[in-house]
Each structure stands twice: as C-alpha cells, then as structure tokens.
Length: 152
Length: 152
DNA sequence: GTAATCTCCGTACATGGGTACGGAGTCAAG
DNA sequence: CTTGACTCCGTACCCATGTACGGAGATTAC
Image 1 (cartoon, rainbow over the protein chains, first blue to last red):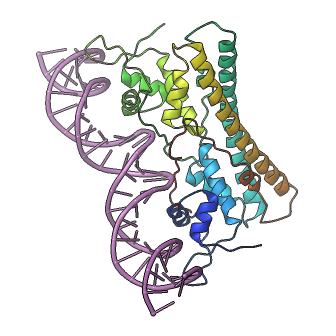
Image 2: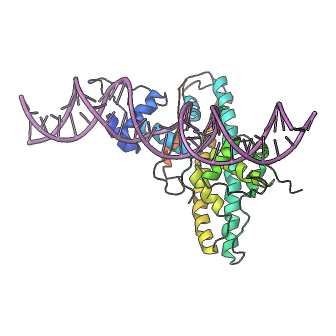
Image 3: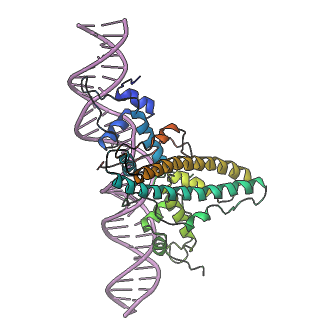
C-alpha cells in the first residue's frame, strides 16, 4: 500500500516535471526525502498532495513564499505561534475571497445583461473592484508580482 | 472635475511606477492615451481604476493575459461573444473562490484547534485541498506559473 | 530666461519561477 | 552483462513582469 516511488513517478502522479520537484526541494517547499538505495530520492504516495496543494495555491494568487508559510502551519510548533499565523493568513484568504466575489458578481451581472438581449457594448463590468483597495499579499512581500504577454 | 493628468500623477494616484504604466500600455492592458500638448500622455482621473483593477486581479491569481481578457469584456463587441466569454471566466472565478474557501475552512479549523489548547503540532491543515484538482487557469494558458525563493 | 522637474523612447537589467542540458552513476529487463 | 531508462548534480537558459538608465526635449517655478 505505501508504495514508495522515485522522483519520476512522483512527478507523473502529481502532474509536474521532475525538475520542478527538485526545484521545490531546493526552495524548501518540499522536505529532503530519504534516499536509501543509491542516492535516488524515495517518495511516498502522500507526497503528491503537497505538490498539488502548491500548484493550486499558485492559481489562487499565492507566491511560493506565501505557500511555504501555509505549509509550515502543518508542522510542529507551539500552538500560540500557529494560531497567530493562521489567523493572519485566514484574514488574507478572506480578503481574496471578497475580491473574487466582487469580480464574480460583476461577471454575473454582465452575463445577465447579455441574456436580456440589448445594451450591446459598454457594459460596466468591473468598477466594483476599484473601490476595495486593501492589500492582499501575505507576508508583506516587498514587490507584488505579475505576468503578461501579447495583448490580443 | 475631469482633471487631466500626466503619467507621473496617474502613477502616483494609482500607486504604481511610471514605468509600469508604460509597460502596461505596451502590453495592451491600457489604451494608448491622447497626447495633445507635446507628446506627453494625458490621462483622466478614471484611468486609475483600470490600474487598480489590474493590481488587484494579480493578487487573485490572474496573469496579465487573463486580465486583458477580463478588461476586454468592458468594451464594444456583440453580446453573444461577451456572454460566452463572461460565462467562461465566471466559471473560473467560481472555482477560485471554492479553492480559497477550502483553504479558509482549513485555517479556521486550525485556529479553533489552537484555541482549544492542545494538539500541539501536527494539525492536519490543508489536506482538504489536494482533493479538488480541477484546472483553474483562464485562457488555456500553456504553462501555469509559480514563484519561490529562500525557504526560511 | 534659466534651473529644476517632468516626460519621451529604447534598451538593459532584475527577480520569480521554473525548464533544459550533459556527463556520470544506477537499476531492471532480456 | 549489456542496453536503455532513469537518476544524480550543477549550471545555464527561458519567460513573465516589471525596474532602471540615460540623453534629449517640454514644462513649470522662480
């Protein structure tokens, strides 16, 4: 049941590349695994959830440093420390949810407008957003991060 | 009221650097503004909301291409196109909300556990996440994007 | 009118998050 | 025991998202 596996198998089951796993390990997101046989890393089935969590958290706007912070909550430390960190991160998550909710509402309105057939063009979408301008990053990260390409 | 302003003033009121605005313009996220005086870009007060929206959307896990897609919904096109795109993006946003909600629930549970004083260490936090493994990106972006550094 | 400040533009550099390379060691099947 | 697939490691490279530079022209404040 506990089927131990090599890095390649883990990469496959977690849906990432081998190099990504090595990268996460270097970055401290994954613990150094045991390597009994010959230096080959040996993982347990359960290691895949961590990688999937990382990937999902990224799509939700957390950077790897944020994610390391979340993962560190699942470890051995005094409850008081855990409690305070968790509460802080909880707050950030709630703000993210609120931000997405306002995008969602705007999109719903837009869809409904379009279904009522008229008002072609110039639907006022996302203004709801520019209101709410509180900070959303976790660890007081110095610079917020973006990513774009062609406009098209 | 309509106080027109230069790029520097816009950057200040939107809380970004001048270079960032030029970069967004190059990337097609901001329209080429009028430049009557001497080639200096001239912006309206309202241009700041667009920039704030971009910044907020980034913290919610959208990349600049995603964001360009959202912003394009607020323009002149046939309702049917807008409708379909909006619905697709709505779906993505709802999935993001669900993902954050499961992180939120796990954090709440963790906070409550710590408040009940005991179970020091090894609180099972985020497992709730690894379940839900649907795709969360918007535009069928080829590669999902991450970011890490020191573990610390 | 002149000095300080701002803007222009193109290009170069920086950082986060991977991804690829290449030579050497290991393992498993035939 | 050989062959092919897999792993090791370090380093180099890549893309997205800015950020900085620098010389030339415009604007504004005195």
